[in-house]
Length: 336
Image 1 (spheres, helix red, strand yellow):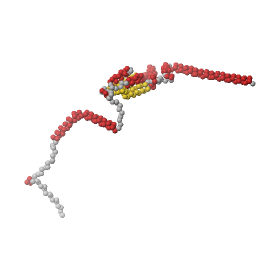
Image 2 (tube, rainbow, N blue to C red; image 1 turned 60 degrees about the horizontal axis):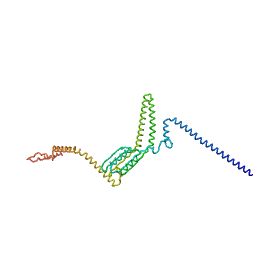
Image 3 (cartoon, helix red, strand yellow; image 1 turned 180 degrees about the vertical axis):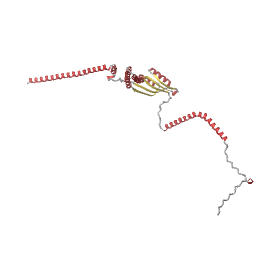
Image 4 (cartoon, rainbow, N blue to C red; image 1 turned 90 degrees about the vertical axis):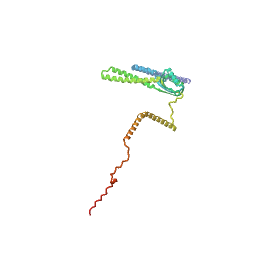
C-alpha cells in the first residue's frame, strides 16, 4: 500500500516537471520570433532609407543633416530658445542732472557694446533740456545696455517689447531655396530656346522670378538686421523738463480751461491774420481812400447847390396893376 502511494507521487512529480519544461520551450520560441521581427523590420527600414537617400540626391542629404541637428530627431527646425529669431525693442525715459553728459555716456556705452547711434535729437535749454537717442545694439548685449542707461539717472519709464519671427525666417529660407531652383530651371530653359517668341517669353519669366527672389532676400536681410541688432529709444530729461505724455483731465474746470485756451489760440490766429493784412491795407487802402475823397470834392464843385424854384412873372395889367381875369362867358340858352 505504501509502495503504491510512493509510485503515484513520483508519477505526479514527473508530470509536473515535464509540463514546466514544455512551457519554457514555448516561451523561448515566442521570444525568439518576437525579437527576430523587429530586426527584420529594422533591416527593411534601413534598406528603404538607403534607397530614399540614393534617390533624393544632394538636396535631401542637406535636409537629413538638418533633421539630425534637430533636438529629439523629429525632423523639424531647431526651435530651441537660443536658436530662435527674436526682435527686441526697448523704450526708456530717464531724468538726469546733465543731459549732455548723459547723452555722451550713452553713446560711449553703445559703441563699447558693438552698436551705434541711429538717431540723435537734442534741445539744450538749461534745466528744460532733453535728448532723444535711437541706439542699435547687439541682441546679446541688449539687457546690459538697458541697465547701463537706467543707471545714468532716475528711470521714470521703461518698456521692452519682443517679437518672435522664427517661423518667418524658416518660411523665408524655404521660399528662397524654392525660388532659386525656379530661377535656375528658367535659365536652363532659356539656354535651350529655339525661337524668338520662346526666347522673349523665357526672358520675361526669368526676370520675374529673379525679382521675386530679390524681394525675398531683401526681407530676409531686414529680419536678420532686426534680430541681430536690437533697438533702444532713450529720452534723457532735465530736472525741470516736462514730460511729453500728460493725462487728459475731465470736468467743468478742465473744459473751461480748454475753451479759454482755444479762445486765446483763435485770438492769436486772428491777430496774426490782421498783422499780415495791415501792410497791404496801409499801402493800398490809404491812397485809394484819398483818391475817392478827391473825386467827391471835384464832383461837389461842379454841381450847383440845389434851391427853391422861382415863380414865373405875371404880365403887367392897367396902371401897372395885375391883369384881371376875363369875365366868364354866359352859357347859350336854347329856344322854347
